[in-house]
Length: 134
Image (cartoon, rainbow, N blue to C red; front, side, top):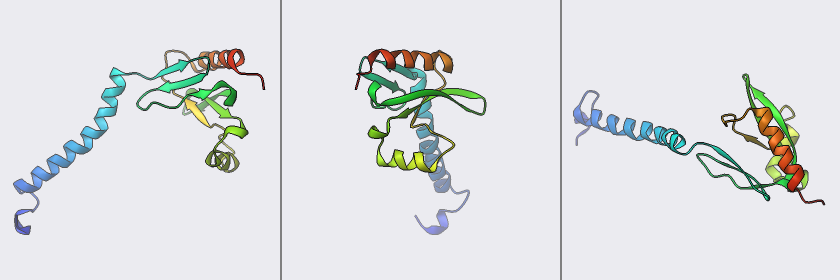
């Protein structure tokens, strides 16, 4: 294919642009479709909690959680949590020192079936019941 044939409006250009658009928008639509089939879930076990969503996040042990609290961004309320300093990664400790406006180490998605207050109360009840006394 010569440089002259790959000009705007040519069949090759339109075909390449079409494939690019299909790949780009197809890649962004797939996670949305997956979330419709597999909605976000909060899994509570005796060991800790885990968020199942687009990505499977690791279990957060009850003993590692310092506290749960309500956060709000643009009138959307959700549950956040902080980890005990002894289990924070170096990056989390650095972030905690530099980001005084947000003390959260993690967040629970806001689009669960319960309100943020109900989720926070439930998480605190489980944490109180299943954490190991240190």
